[in-house]
Amino acid sequence: MSTDTRSASDVGTTNNRSIVLTCRPKLRFNQVIPTLNIDAPDILFEQTIGHPSGMNGRVDDHGDINLTNMPLDPAYNDNVDITINLDTSNLYEPTGKRVAGRWAFAEESSGQGETGFAWFCGIDDQGKYTTKKSIDVPGMRIERLNDVQLRIYDDTPDTASTYAYAIALVLPGYNNYYITIDPRITSKSKV
Image 1 (cartoon, rainbow, N blue to C red):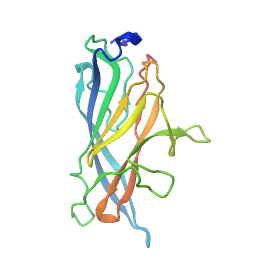
Image 2: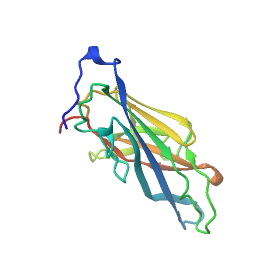
Image 3: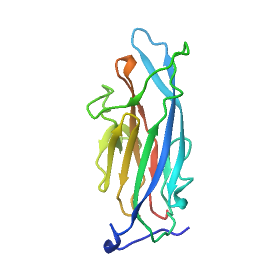
Image 4: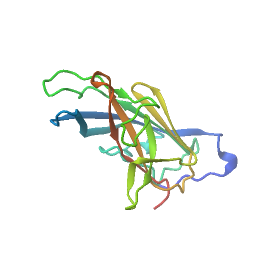
């Protein structure tokens, strides 16, 4: 595959590339009394669609998205719209009772420095991505479409750096318990 590069005059004259993926978390109820402690250590991500076809196979089962070496296709530009669908079919209590889940709202928080439905992660003092430090990435934004769909609009150039993103799951039946999930999107560069 070769990297698709376009001049500024090409931007907006063709379609954005797209990736659609499903996030299927599985809950773990930790017995910490008196504080409720729920996490989702077993999360399966699966890409369901990619346009053009060369965009398929870019999401691994951890939710990391690889945008390196995008295939040349004259009908598409370098922008990528990434839709993340939440599948709640694996959300259960230890007793087997189903648990409702949704993407967080913008104002919801973990109470530990993480706020909103999604954000891009900054770097901590040890040089690692942290969900507790939100950053702006020029040319990128995330939108909450509804309770089960988020969309990342990646309008960065094809030389953009690798970055991490975080998404937040909320359990309404547990006083809007907030769980953070943090995969990565790999650079569009040739590296």
